[in-house]
Image (cartoon, rainbow, N blue to C red; front, side, top):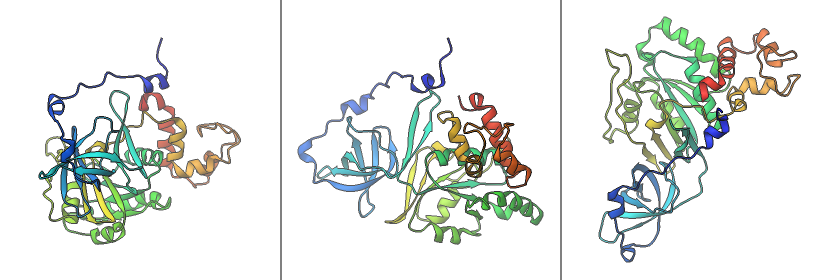
Length: 331
């Protein structure tokens, strides 16, 4: 008998064995200094880098009894006297948490305490409304606002810019902020940086869209590997392997996480898809039937609005595709 969707989600997996290196680590509790507050800026297996109040970095071991820390976690740690290491002892309550599904139908936390997601797009990989809408669904499910950042704008001629502008206007009309920038030349980046001040941003996007170049522009003192588009495949070369937090000031930082190059959606429900299309969710409240899927049902307010040109063709088509192929797309 085939397993149900929820059975697939909840099936258990054997825990991975603890590494020998981690087993051999013995912490002398008497060597630990007083607790301090910090923020997790990167994780490496059973260790994390924690930035203290002066944003100096301390490599900390993770206590076995703790929940899994992620980049952005506010934490309590204790230094080891005379060493440049310490122990992570407690995680503070999270304001937000972005999760993603794993290939084994598990859910993995990715980043904590960000205010919004900056979704970076670029022309070489092609502007896909379907890809963008999938990101928006995932972000909405985590209750995180999205800024749409179109990079490498300088590579487009005026005709191409006009075409992309028209397509982006659909999202601007839905109140998604849209930035047109060039991280290489600095076009539009100062305005982005000004709006970014005082916020915590997760930068997401496929490989090759210029994330590393943008981070290098915003944080010129950081050593960041940058990659180009492969001439053979047309795909971006992966240059970052671990999530990392970059700080402008105490109230402003950016998280780069390779784990969100593409959002998987299998862990969501059909209603989450509807909520991810904000205009469809709002209009859906007026439908004749509460369980209306906005496909061909009578009395559907969404379909009526589409006929009156109140919903863009691409948005309705993408929504209907995801709903009609829900099991195939998300399982």
